[in-house]
Amino acid sequence: MSKHTAEEVVRRATTAFNSGRPDEARKLCEEGLARQPRDPMLNHLLAAVLFSSGEVQPARAHVETSLAQQPANAAAHLLAARIARAAGDFDGALSHLDRAIALAPQREAFLEKARTLDQAGLRPQARAAWRAILEVVPTNTEAAARLGRLAWEDGDHAAAATLLERAAKNDAPASVWFDLGLARQDLRDPNGAVTAYRKALEKKPDHAEAALNLGVVLQEKGDLDGAMRAYAEAYRLRPQTFGTIAMALTSAPHGRLWLDEASLRRSLGG
Image (cartoon, rainbow, N blue to C red; front, side, top):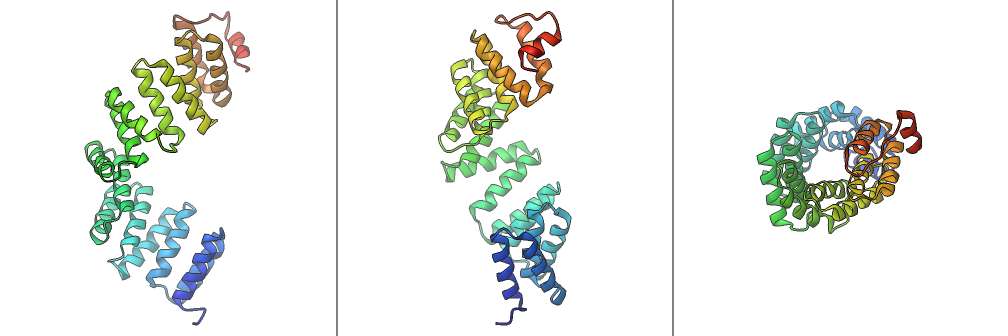
């Protein structure tokens, strides 16, 4: 097989990309397209390479060229949807996803549709999409986590905690544990909230909000020394939290008074 055929260029470019050499993959695709500018495989692959490096608009142009040649390619529609979502074109993304699902109803396309509805702020549709995924795949952490977050935003803290605890049974990211901390805190479960916030910090040591909220809960529990350690960590990670920390320390039943701002900053290690 000639090394200049589209199939061979795609094979070599894919190998380069998967081996951590995206610049080489891009160059191979561009050289192939110089010979065959409308080739759907080369345009599809170059779109993926460009998108991986954050070049959204060029990636979009190439995937649309690919789809113009092969409109029944479900994988290309899925990539086009991701690119459109990154560009903020949610209608375009949903159109591509509906086409991808019609062509090949695979789990990733349904997940991408739920993410797109969520990001577009279409809460009822997003909730329905996440629920449908969770019914089919009860162990899907992302669906349980997003439904939990939506429930918390709606003020249904008990439902939120149940869903987030379900998500946290797997190897959940820090965001799940943080949201679980919020739900437990609102349910007046300080011990559970402390556990969740500490887990969030374990997963993501630079999670300033988790450190701040941990300080608030420890202070409410009467553990002011522990609260000060958590506040100091939050302040170290994000100095802008100083105002919130000062307010919490001086307004809560379990607090301390500082004569001046500089004194408090020194206590926080600043």
